[in-house]
Length: 280
Image (cartoon, rainbow, N blue to C red; front, side, top):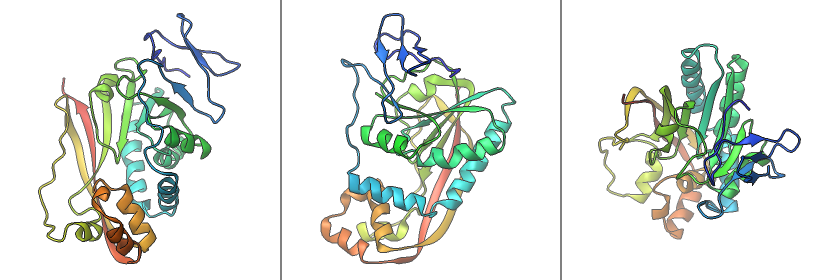
């Protein structure tokens, strides 16, 4: 590894033991690699992680949905965005973090495309959800996987070239702190019409409203593009998409049963793919 990590206990630089792959600092704080394939970089006194964000059933449904190819147009566009970003940064080895990487699905789709294009890049998947990092490791996600507290990331300031925040809100200032001054954050956010036919079942009087991004003040938009397409989905897939959405909590059991029993022939997918840069 060429990137220096910081001790989550004392913020000293971490070194890696070659035989065990574990990390340690000069203040004798040790962080062994979990047998499943990830590193828990946690402080007993400061760390705040989530043992379980989704139930096992929800994670299984999400996994099968994503692996079905339903998101193929999105993946193709994200690959293009990342390849363009990497090409603009020359031949030096890049550092890429996938923030809240979940089960590693996006990393598994993006990393091979970059490798095939001969992009020299070190990839990191980070999350505060134990069951998610376990699933990412089990699926052999091609990245260095870290379980950590998101409040203070174990990376030096201005050390990361690209941060991807995919289908997750950009919160706090840590992603901005660790980003190089000429680095970029790739943000994936649902657009106005995303999952419209499912959303109509939750909100009977649904109307289109202007898109609100709510970005931190320390960043500004570099590029922004919409990706919209339709797909046919089964009732099972529609229910999983509902569970994955920010409005899924509003659906009661009766409504979920209705969603599960109803296939949708032309479900709208609508995303905003935004690259952000620092305000300097």
